[in-house]
Image (cartoon, rainbow, N blue to C red):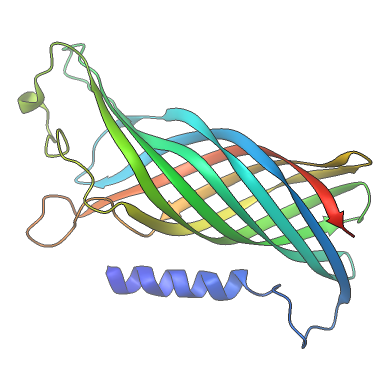
Length: 230
C-alpha cells in the first residue's frame, strides 16, 4: 500500500509539473505575479478501514495565495500557484443505534498546496482554469466532541474514541477547477477542489486496528488576487 501511494504521488508531481518554467519551453513568455487571499468551505470525511459511517462535516478553510504565470501556448495560459491555509477538518459519525448519541472530531491544520495552474480563454476577461498538484499539512490540534451520556463500548467500531492522532504530518494530491474573472480591481476566482490524502493519521501497521485513516475533502473556495507584475 505504501509503495502504491508513493508511485501515485510521484506520477502526480510529474503531471502537475508540466507547466513549470523552463528554458526549453516554446510558449510565449509571461511574467505575471499575483498575490491575494482565499476563503471557503470544507466538506470533510475520513476514509476509514474498517468503515465508520459518517455525516459530512462542513467547516472553514482560508489563507494566502501567490500565483506566477510564466507562459502562454495559444489559448492555454500556464503557471504555478502556492497557498498557505488554515483549514478545519475532521469527521462526524452517523450513529444509527437509536441512542441519540453523537460524536465528532475537529482537526485543525496548516496546509501548503503547490499547484500547476492552467487557464483557458482570454488573458483579459473570463477564463476557465484547472489546478493540479500536491499538498502537505501539519496538525495543530484536535478535539473530540461527544454527547452526554456517551457509551462507546456499544458502537460497532470504537477504537478511535479517545485515541489521539499518531501522525501529525499529512500529504496528498489535489485536483480542482473553476472560473476566473479578471477586472480592473483584481482577479476573482471561484473553484471546486477534491483532496485525496496519501498519508494516514493513525498508524496502519499489521499490529494496528485501522488499515486506513485518511482525509478525503471536497473544497469550495473563492480567491481574490491582485497583479504585482504583468
